[in-house]
Length: 140
Ligand SMILES: C[S@@+](CC[C@H](N)C(=O)[O-])C[C@H]1O[C@@H](n2cnc3c(N)ncnc32)[C@H](O)[C@@H]1O
Image (tube, rainbow, N blue to C red; front, side, top):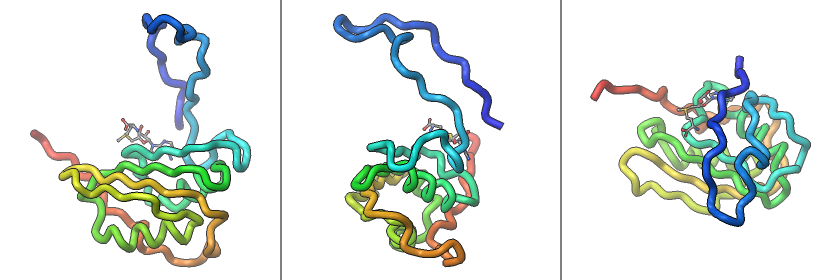
């Protein structure tokens, strides 16, 4: 489903930085199963990408690959949230602690979480707070 994206040609970079082409590039992968070891990354970012109805799978995968104490950053369209408190409660049950929430922007909400451990609920536990509204695109 996810093909290797086209990458920009090498761009001029500031002196002292290695050429863009020499740096590791991100690879396209499903958020449900990313090709990373358990507890191997410091930061996981979901920027406008909690798109599926299986947000829980995405967040559990982020939990798997994050190191203990790792940072989970979420930026999402504000209109998708019916109740931010239940969303935060549900994410907490998946093994995260809320570090900060920024609800000041009219269009986007920003959240930071710290990984506290593995999910604290079993796979059958209902987490209704993770049901976000569909993202509606409006013609401008
Ligand atoms: C609204 S775009 C946001 C793109 C980018 N993160 C940004 O902020 O500009 C949503 C992205 O989520 C990706 N996405 C949705 N479900 C995904 C999944 N299960 N695994 C990987 N990517 C997914 C889509 O392919 C799309 O690129």
